[in-house]
Image 1: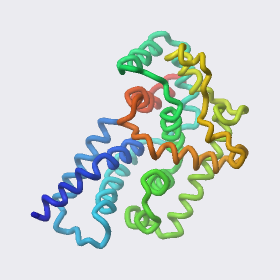
Image 2: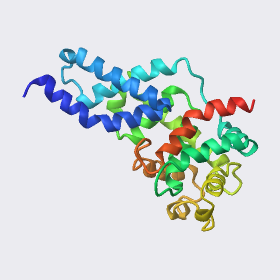
Image 3: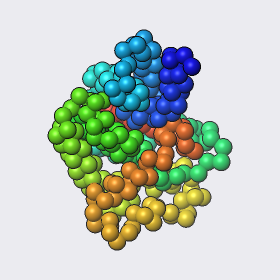
Amino acid sequence: MDTTLHYKTEFVRLRDNLESFVFRFVCNRQDMEDIVQETYVKVFQNINTFQNRSSFKTWVFTIAANTAKNYLKKHKLWKENFQDKAEALHLESDEIMGLLKNVYYTSPDIQFEICEHISYCFNCIIKTLKLSQQICLLLKEIYGFKIKEIMEITLFSEGKVKHNLSYAKKNMALIFDQRCALINKKGICNQCNSLMDALHPEQAKDKKTAPDLFFTKSCKNDPVGLLNIRMEMIKLIHPLNSPNSHLNTYLIEHLPEWANMKN
């Protein structure tokens, strides 16, 4: 088989995971598509320089991560209260709430899924971290790269990769613990139940909240343990190819805009 043709076939196999990774990193479908396409062009413009020192997957993700980082340099980190401001704006504006409902009801067999919303919420919170922490956490915990591979992708030392992972998990666990009323009844964020009430009142009557996994005795008072459970669930959810991805994509793409409207 022709070498270029072989790698094009490999790229197609990687594309689903690559799109998922880039979207979680940039939080915009059109930008994701542009970055993945630019990655494809760069890969095959430089395919003769690929010398199998790392896996083809690691090399492709390196190009995609660097392309996405260049895009994100002009964007500010998100604030922890973006979701609160967006929720308040929707409650105040029938027009904006109407747009949200129109998006939600475009999908047949709609059913508000808590696990999908947790994935969306995870993405909102990870955007509050430094870029170095975001990329290390996503690569390691969601996309299964090893420390050595993350070192190749980021050009970080082993110590820096582990430092970023440690601080990312601590920061994420702390924010979830302080905000998420789904798990911690003292948390200030009730967006899961608020959205269910607004978008699917019949389903909301059941008042189903988090999966039973969250309430295991071993993790109930362990924020990092609960974060790990969230991440295990998130691995199973493709942010662009799940039953309510149309809703969660709409939410995450507009969140900074809505938050700024409440300033």
